[in-house]
Length: 197
Image (tube, rainbow, N blue to C red; front, side):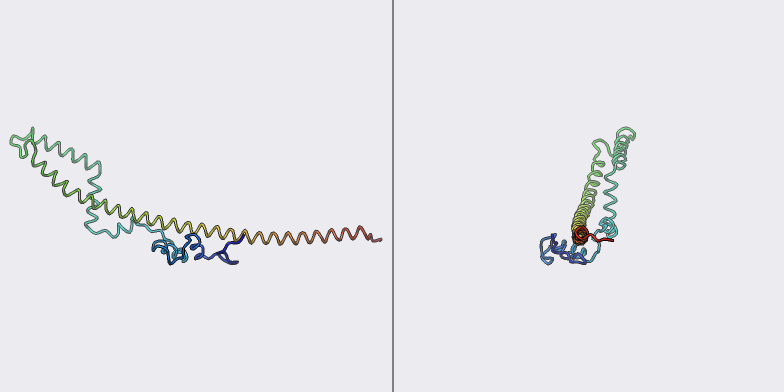
């Protein structure tokens, strides 16, 4: 059994990639070509997308992420609920002349403004997280393709070694057979021509 991309001394990484991907390297999409080039050059493809994004964020993006983080926490919900109850109790029972009497129009305005500002900020943060997720998926794909190429190359190397071992074993077996045939011939000759001492 012969492997087309195995030479007696090494396994060609370019041919390994071509066989696995079943295309010429120039016809590959840019992402796969990038992976194959790094595979051939024996360089890694894994990246820390989260860290790259974190370091490249602007001040506004950091604020948006922090607002989304705080606004989506139980601490915020509980604190905000307590503040709403306090607002209503103060304006309904504790103040003689309430600054925001029932139906709490000022409170409604504050909540509407908060929602109007907070919603787009949270959406910006979610969009950025979606972009990070897409880049992570792309990075995972690249790492997986490179890993498959590496595994394929390891299989080819193992096959090459096994093939070389097989040739060596067959050669040794032929030598042993020749030695046995010589021994048998010598023993037969001794039986047919016994020497007297």
